[in-house]
Length: 62
Image 1: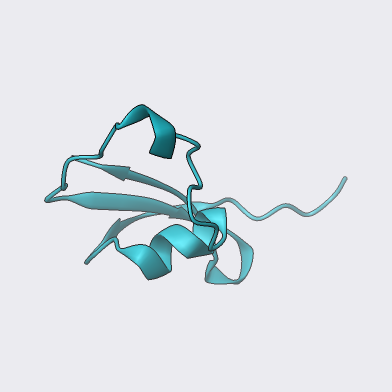
Image 2: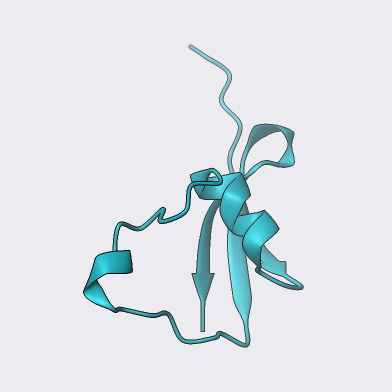
């Protein structure tokens, strides 16, 4: 049986361009919504999922 790491859910102090790039890369339109006029509202509380080596794998904000 393979030894797998369980990802950690953590509260993030901040979520900005550096954290987004860690998850999605540094492309200009990672969500593919630039042409739709959609924008994301700022969030006050941030959570992340960190995997092996501490890499940020996912984010959710409230």
